[in-house]
Image (tube, rainbow, N blue to C red; front, side, top):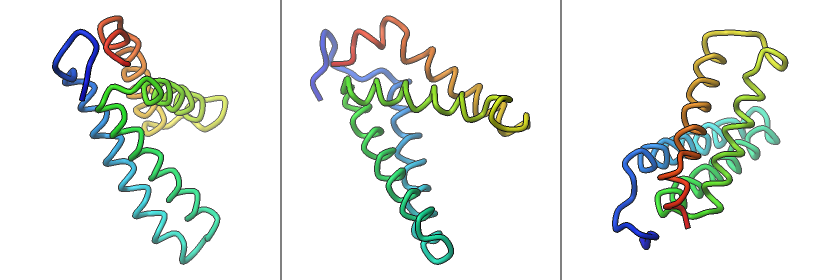
Length: 116
């Protein structure tokens, strides 16, 4: 991994990247099981899983496109979990809070400047 100005990857970025990889694996496995019941849904889950895994590895390597993708994904999570789209529940509030924390962390100046 080559980083601009530093020789390390920030710990928080590594945590977010690992969570993306774990989520991608979960989506991929659930997508395979979903193929037995709903083919289109299963294909979408598998595709989403592959994207999450790709974003996770690229974010761990501090790639600019993965940083932008992570920002867009988390904004999408906030929109989907907003009370305008879904009923307000503990799950949606926690999901939105985590997405907002990740966005704030990723746009912080010290992280934003390390992404290539």
